Amino acid sequence: MDQELQTKLEKLAFERTKPFCYGCYIEAPTSRCACCGSDDLMRLMESVDCEYGVDWVISEILRAELTTVDIEEAFEQSIRECYPEEVQVGWLNLDTVSVIKEMDPISWDCAVSEWRSQEESEGTIVSVDGSANYYRVTDIEELL
Image (tube, rainbow, N blue to C red; front, side):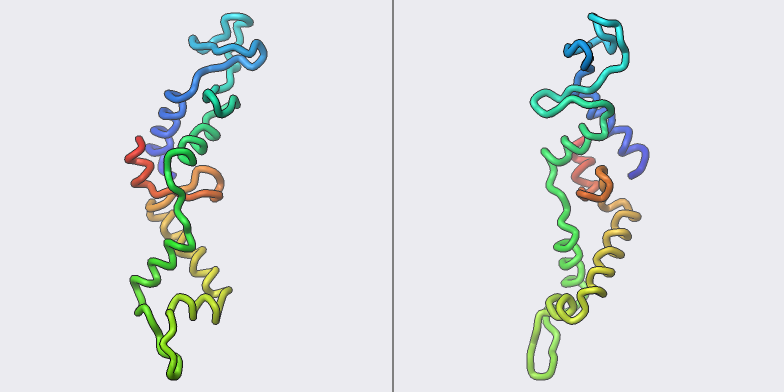
Protein backbone atom coordinates (compact mmCIF):
# COMPACT_ATOMS: atom_id res chain seq x y z
CA MET A 1 0.00 0.00 0.00
CA ASP A 2 1.37 3.41 -0.83
CA GLN A 3 2.39 5.67 2.03
CA GLU A 4 -0.14 8.42 1.27
CA LEU A 5 -3.07 6.01 1.45
CA GLN A 6 -1.69 4.45 4.64
CA THR A 7 -1.35 7.91 6.24
CA LYS A 8 -4.93 8.82 5.33
CA LEU A 9 -6.23 5.53 6.74
CA GLU A 10 -4.32 6.07 9.98
CA LYS A 11 -5.77 9.58 10.25
CA LEU A 12 -9.26 8.16 9.78
CA ALA A 13 -8.56 5.52 12.44
CA PHE A 14 -7.46 8.19 14.93
CA GLU A 15 -10.57 10.27 14.16
CA ARG A 16 -12.86 7.31 14.81
CA THR A 17 -11.25 6.16 18.05
CA LYS A 18 -10.46 7.63 21.45
CA PRO A 19 -7.35 7.33 23.60
CA PHE A 20 -8.03 4.86 26.42
CA CYS A 21 -6.10 3.94 29.56
CA TYR A 22 -6.61 0.23 30.04
CA GLY A 23 -5.00 0.27 33.50
CA CYS A 24 -7.55 2.73 34.87
CA TYR A 25 -10.18 1.68 32.35
CA ILE A 26 -11.11 5.23 31.40
CA GLU A 27 -10.98 7.41 28.32
CA ALA A 28 -8.05 9.80 28.12
CA PRO A 29 -9.09 12.56 25.72
CA THR A 30 -5.95 14.63 26.39
CA SER A 31 -3.72 11.69 25.36
CA ARG A 32 -2.63 11.31 28.96
CA CYS A 33 -4.63 9.46 31.62
CA ALA A 34 -6.13 11.88 34.13
CA CYS A 35 -6.01 9.20 36.82
CA CYS A 36 -2.51 7.68 36.56
CA GLY A 37 -0.79 10.09 34.15
CA SER A 38 0.17 7.37 31.68
CA ASP A 39 0.62 8.17 28.01
CA ASP A 40 0.83 4.47 27.09
CA LEU A 41 -2.72 4.41 25.79
CA MET A 42 -4.81 2.07 23.71
CA ARG A 43 -7.32 3.16 21.07
CA LEU A 44 -10.99 2.63 21.91
CA MET A 45 -13.46 2.06 19.12
CA GLU A 46 -16.79 2.16 20.87
CA SER A 47 -18.90 -0.99 20.66
CA VAL A 48 -16.08 -2.79 18.83
CA ASP A 49 -12.83 -3.18 20.78
CA CYS A 50 -9.95 -1.57 22.60
CA GLU A 51 -6.37 -2.34 21.56
CA TYR A 52 -2.97 -0.80 20.96
CA GLY A 53 -2.21 0.69 17.55
CA VAL A 54 -4.57 1.51 14.71
CA ASP A 55 -4.02 -1.32 12.23
CA TRP A 56 -6.92 -3.23 13.75
CA VAL A 57 -9.09 -0.09 13.53
CA ILE A 58 -8.31 0.31 9.83
CA SER A 59 -9.20 -3.35 9.21
CA GLU A 60 -12.44 -2.95 11.17
CA ILE A 61 -13.49 0.22 9.32
CA LEU A 62 -12.81 -1.30 5.92
CA ARG A 63 -14.54 -4.58 6.84
CA ALA A 64 -17.62 -2.72 8.09
CA GLU A 65 -17.92 -0.14 5.33
CA LEU A 66 -16.53 -1.68 2.15
CA THR A 67 -17.04 -4.84 0.17
CA THR A 68 -14.03 -7.09 -0.18
CA VAL A 69 -12.85 -8.11 -3.61
CA ASP A 70 -13.60 -11.72 -4.43
CA ILE A 71 -10.28 -12.46 -6.14
CA GLU A 72 -11.50 -15.63 -7.83
CA GLU A 73 -14.61 -13.92 -9.21
CA ALA A 74 -12.70 -10.82 -10.35
CA PHE A 75 -10.13 -12.96 -12.15
CA GLU A 76 -12.86 -15.01 -13.77
CA GLN A 77 -14.47 -11.80 -15.03
CA SER A 78 -11.11 -10.68 -16.42
CA ILE A 79 -10.73 -13.97 -18.29
CA ARG A 80 -14.26 -13.70 -19.67
CA GLU A 81 -13.38 -10.25 -21.04
CA CYS A 82 -10.23 -11.58 -22.76
CA TYR A 83 -11.46 -14.86 -24.23
CA PRO A 84 -14.62 -16.00 -26.00
CA GLU A 85 -17.43 -17.10 -23.74
CA GLU A 86 -17.48 -20.56 -25.26
CA VAL A 87 -14.86 -22.88 -26.66
CA GLN A 88 -15.60 -25.76 -28.99
CA VAL A 89 -14.28 -29.15 -27.97
CA GLY A 90 -15.22 -31.62 -30.65
CA TRP A 91 -18.93 -31.11 -31.18
CA LEU A 92 -19.48 -29.52 -27.74
CA ASN A 93 -19.60 -25.79 -27.03
CA LEU A 94 -18.38 -25.34 -23.45
CA ASP A 95 -17.84 -22.42 -21.11
CA THR A 96 -14.20 -21.36 -21.53
CA VAL A 97 -13.61 -20.59 -17.86
CA SER A 98 -15.14 -23.87 -16.72
CA VAL A 99 -12.98 -25.82 -19.15
CA ILE A 100 -9.78 -24.15 -17.95
CA LYS A 101 -10.67 -24.60 -14.27
CA GLU A 102 -11.60 -28.26 -14.68
CA MET A 103 -8.88 -29.31 -17.10
CA ASP A 104 -5.96 -27.69 -15.27
CA PRO A 105 -6.87 -26.49 -11.76
CA ILE A 106 -3.22 -25.98 -10.80
CA SER A 107 -2.64 -23.69 -13.76
CA TRP A 108 -5.87 -21.85 -12.88
CA ASP A 109 -4.73 -21.33 -9.27
CA CYS A 110 -1.33 -20.06 -10.46
CA ALA A 111 -3.00 -17.66 -12.88
CA VAL A 112 -5.33 -16.36 -10.16
CA SER A 113 -2.34 -15.78 -7.88
CA GLU A 114 -0.38 -13.99 -10.61
CA TRP A 115 -3.39 -11.82 -11.48
CA ARG A 116 -3.89 -10.87 -7.81
CA SER A 117 -0.20 -10.01 -7.51
CA GLN A 118 -0.33 -7.90 -10.68
CA GLU A 119 -3.46 -6.04 -9.55
CA GLU A 120 -1.82 -5.38 -6.20
CA SER A 121 1.44 -4.11 -7.73
CA GLU A 122 -0.52 -1.82 -10.07
CA GLY A 123 -2.34 -0.35 -7.07
CA THR A 124 -5.80 -1.49 -8.14
CA ILE A 125 -6.39 -3.61 -5.04
CA VAL A 126 -4.82 -3.54 -1.59
CA SER A 127 -4.83 -5.63 1.56
CA VAL A 128 -4.44 -4.14 5.00
CA ASP A 129 -4.60 -7.39 6.93
CA GLY A 130 -1.86 -9.58 5.53
CA SER A 131 -3.65 -10.69 2.35
CA ALA A 132 -6.72 -12.01 4.15
CA ASN A 133 -9.00 -9.45 2.50
CA TYR A 134 -8.52 -7.24 -0.53
CA TYR A 135 -10.25 -3.95 -1.26
CA ARG A 136 -10.39 -1.80 -4.36
CA VAL A 137 -8.20 1.27 -3.89
CA THR A 138 -10.89 3.42 -5.52
CA ASP A 139 -13.40 2.28 -2.86
CA ILE A 140 -10.97 3.20 -0.09
CA GLU A 141 -10.31 6.60 -1.65
CA GLU A 142 -14.07 7.26 -1.82
CA LEU A 143 -14.37 6.34 1.87
CA LEU A 144 -11.64 8.82 2.77
